[in-house]
Length: 137
Length: 137
DNA sequence: TCCACACACTTGCAAAATGCAAGTAACTAA
DNA sequence: TTAGTTACTTGCATTTTGCAAGTGTGTGGA
Image (cartoon, rainbow over all chains, first blue to last red; front, side, top):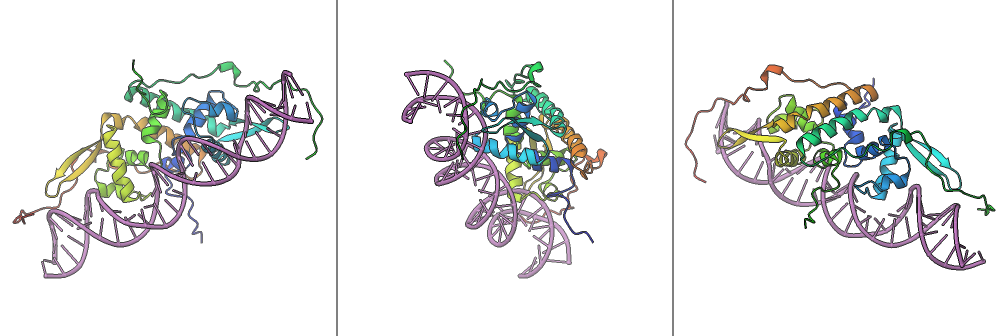
């Protein structure tokens, strides 16, 4: 027989969503990715100023939850661009619900800049780079 | 000039919503209240088994955030029934978004029992109680 | 070749939040 | 009087958060 517990707390969709997203930072990272930010540095500079160790941790967690995917946008050193999977993009509905609730019930709050709509697909600007002699490891 | 910081992190509606609700338990308490639970004991018995000290803390926080209101349903000892304010009920939209996302993207999760729809307005069943001599403090 | 700087993390550590278990206050029921 | 119930509260160990500083690997300029 199967005695393994399938869920950490219960089978409730809300409880399991909160096991992944239930903290002060995860959804803000998703918000920023949804708004077109893609690099660690861009994410770190958001107005809430997420501590960098928390950012690294959240990107790792969201990645292993299948919400964020990483693709290298340059080599030497490898740098990753973070993007949302379909599962991650679907969180737009949750964010929208938060925005509506917050704007209605917390005075003074606003919807943050959505980012340039057409820029989402473009790669980050990489500084012009002349190949130089590779130093041996 | 006004140098007071109006918001803890930023003016973003999402960030400010998460400052109130961004943890693993708050929205589960709201969910239960929305489903008609009203006493501390009922809330403590939900399938996720919130630790009682966390429950007390969350009810306090949600109350001071204007999401939950307390009304005594009996005296000696005073017992409070917790209900959602209009601000709290409006979180139903956020919960619905989580339910939809969770059911779509986390296999096996379900919508929990909504509770008896007609029972929400009724007071909790209070055991029949014959007044007895009051013992001095 | 050296220096300053930038990006993307990583590490150390103190403070805060979480969670388990036990305790308390005021009652009811037998 | 004794046991049980409800609604919390308290103590304490573990985990998470957050600040600050450090590290590795690059670039650009003198």
